[in-house]
Length: 182
Image 1: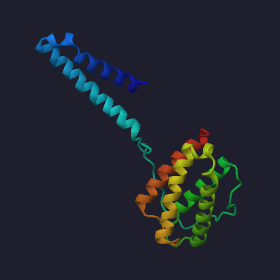
Image 2: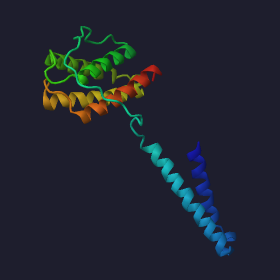
Image 3: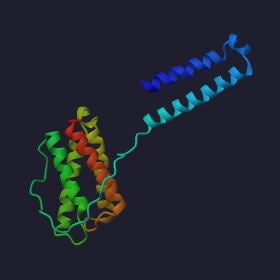
Image 4: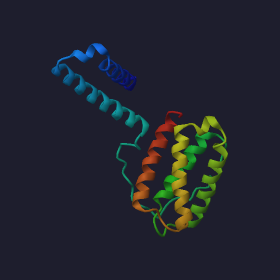
């Protein structure tokens, strides 16, 4: 709404600036008009840029230390209920992201994780109502990051700190979206 008003004000001032009656203004009035147009134009550009390029979570996420001891899950696979499956895949991905070098059954975990991620994406991306949800798009991005790591480095190597930080930020966003049923 604010950006629409700013655009409208900028257009109105630009049109008024070129009207014949405004050509006979004093230097002071012209300068004030130019200053307004500059500031309104900058505001329009700033608000449009912020809307066009949304930022990733601005909240700082603490990255937990990697671990080697964990409980290996037995609930792999999909239930074909989006909210349950998204929460389960996210939970498994959080564990996979936290695994450190030398974790027990790390390779088995990675293989099961990759299969679950592929099954999740290939099933749910076919449904426009699901594919349009913010939780799905963020989860899809996280899945691509983790699957890319597995493809490039294999299942035995832990994720680097920078990648882990990004994933934990995305997991926080996914959790927020799922709580809002989005």
